Length: 342
Image 1 (cartoon, helix red, strand yellow):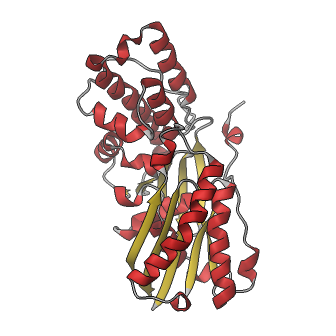
Image 2 (cartoon, rainbow, N blue to C red):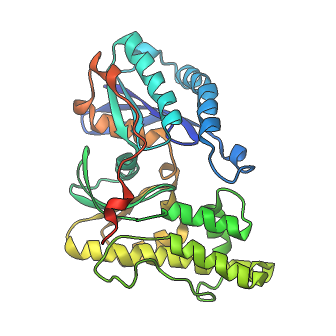
């Protein structure tokens, strides 16, 4: 029986998780998460320096709480999984420093987790999916179509070339006067709106063989619409505006992914990341594909459960002590400019 500690601090969620596993079976023991969302409502987005300071304040109390609550001592932990990339460097380093401190004190191995792969592999917390599979990864900073060939390998097939889907929701919501984060608010308003009321452009739709996505033009289109006639923001129109704006994002993702699926028709599909919580996206993709697994909402947003899960699945790939003390943070996973077709 192996006991795994997962640590997630890539952005604005301070999260710790304990998981126990034996062979192919793994079971979550507990997950504690402190969210900084309330802090950033004033700013309308994440402030890296503030995020780092709040991680430092919350990590130690959370660590002590999860151990005490579950009657576990730190020496009982067999493996530490920590997000190392991609993310905000300051926040990432707070989690990595906790992992290294524990590894140094107890001579334990560390698995440096790819935050994006962890989002997709979280499907295994509730559902069995075989490799290889196609992944639709949608978060605040990334929108990718990938091919996952193992618990430690994925190939990027297409990407957004500018804003991610999550950014499109947040930036669009800000223009509408919505609270931060705007994605859940837009989703809620859209449920009672007419998704055909307003017309917005789908990025790169005129390139029928290009699977890459683009969302910056959508945000610009919304801004120009509001500048031309701000009556669209009136209470009697805002739900229709949300529904139409959301539908454009969802259809853009669905249409572009269909190009990828056509190349790999037999592979199952997994959808993960914070935007995978969107109810309309889940509805559209479930209607379109039968062989699909969508990560449960509780594991879609940033959380340490997915990190502990990925670490356990990669226990043979963990860095032993003392080599694990050399792991470091990386802010990027890909360069979006590489996906712009000349």
